[in-house]
Image (cartoon, rainbow, N blue to C red; front, side, top):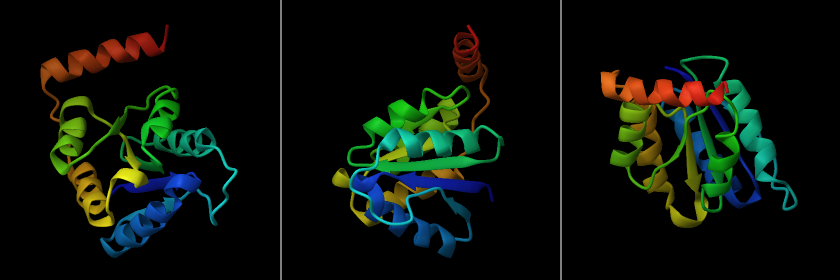
Length: 149
């Protein structure tokens, strides 16, 4: 199993803590990159960048970020070269994000998901594999070329 890097801002703290316990029980190696305790004045880009910088170090690593709606952390993580961040509102979307787009960071919104829904989405994301189909790889190669311009 891959290492999962997990972080959230104040608006995603509760779900992050729930997912950390859930993933440990599932046998995943989970690295909690913060915060350790609820801090109402924190900023999501700080945590998104921490997770993204760890994920790009290994092809096997995955990241999970949580904020209120998942949008802010997704935008911030996506600014790091090599990160393919995605939101997912159901397990099928999470699976396809990896299968088609080789997503390596999942961004969730605590304000829009129940814990059990988030668990299903996370497991689908973590268990999925990139299809490697030529059309998908061609598209990813175009993104890589843009990242290095």
